Image (cartoon, rainbow, N blue to C red; front, top):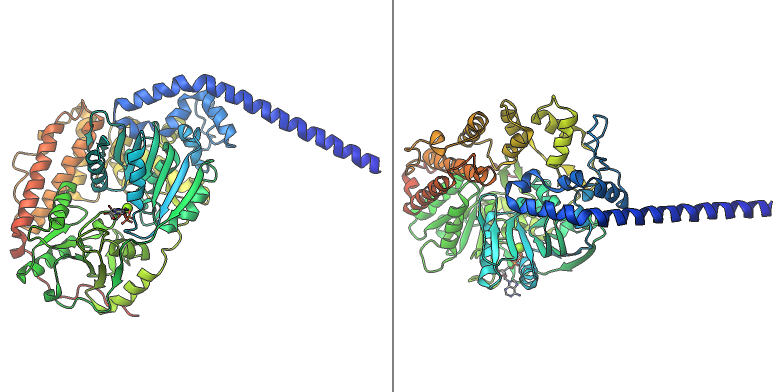
Length: 600
Ligand SMILES: Nc1ncnc2c1ncn2[C@@H]1O[C@H](COP(=O)(O)OP(=O)(O)OP(=O)(O)O)[C@@H](O)[C@H]1O
Ligand SMILES: [Mg+2]
């Protein structure tokens, strides 16, 4: 009996050793094949990618998988995933393209590196971005990925000033600097096919927040896909467990650096009761455009201060000009009235944040601000080494103070899942397997059927689907439809939506979209009423969309320069208008309560 058992164990052992040896031989064979195939093909992909900006959108990560047949097959196995085991055969309708459980396998170039990932986490104004940027400055090549064009601009300016030549690449701009090995980009433009020494993804929590359903996947793509020796992630401590978990399967080394706030932020016990309490350096935060102008009007009427304004639908150039004017202590515009557009990473000379309300309409419903939103916005006051070293924060209404105080004391809730969305390549393979389906149906199918690991949620693509429904009507290739759908159109804005539809229609008919056919000569004029101002902002969005499309379909959108100059005219008109405060006489001051009463 004992002998029998012994023999059985020996047999099991021999079998076990045999199977391990077999696996090692297979793996070595696979590696040899990877070496043989990848360098030539990858360099072709890289060259092609540098050729034009639109490829960032149309041919990202999975394109490599699909083209590098052998490479892909083996890579999938090495990573322990058969998810993307495309063998070069035609896509079959039985293959489950909606299986998104291993998104890290979509980025073979990053997976070939053992990245050193450094998480810089801490409260606002604690030097996270500053320290990450120091590393970027020292690196031989690198990229900064920010959530806003304003941040990308700020970083490009800063690096160039520090004699580190740096390109600026956003969806709408491509400013190349001679000899630059560094880039400052908006996160959507992060290139996952280049190799860098150092990379930064800033405000990483913005991507992972459930509130940021639409843009989250760009951050996830950057997190998994950027091929850098060192990858610096800056953000709220609430992201740490999730990021660590996501990166377990990538084989990267992860280090967490925790920061403390560099200057104090004092929550005040009393609200700001009247306009006479407003002082230099104050920033009044409110969430509707109408309220922004109403408050600006009230403050300026009192005669002591002039206000700059910053809000989301203001053209980015105007936002920068307004923020710069507020930061400049030598002029009279010493108060800021802003929406949460100031909430991410910007350095403004604010001494006190005053919340006019702690509720916000988020496109679907009016809801309370989250703890992280309150902390993020409040954190703009008292920036380190600014004119106001101690920040203060309060509200307009004393009923809001308890929520403000408790939010500032609470840690932000742990972020549990990151946004994910299928790449164009997956959608395209899916479309080949289901040729009768339009893009709308394909997107709908992915949203409804996507299989995900517990670290991810499928991003909200409601707006993309609205755009898809429009382009599905037109005789366009899937590739063109996709390009229109991922464009930065504000599909819920009437004028922008109409501009978008017109661009797509003209493109499908003649392949050439002339700006003059869309905008008549007299379209751009000085606004005189709030409605006209809003119209001008929308026209700016249409022009911005034209510039975006012209960077990707150069021959079909030939009037980029005209669009850019029209955009500048819009900016000038809006800025002049804000300076002259023409709106005052048109916006009725309402004494109605600003907010619904909150009970504690
Ligand atoms: N060591 C330092 N020396 C000089 N200035 C610094 C230093 N650290 C930070 N700063 C300055 O302090 C301000 C806040 O730093 P930074 O923008 O890096 O904070 P942050 O933690 O990224 O904040 P946020 O979460 O709001 O993005 C910036 O103006 C930055 O230039
Ligand atoms: Mg920062």
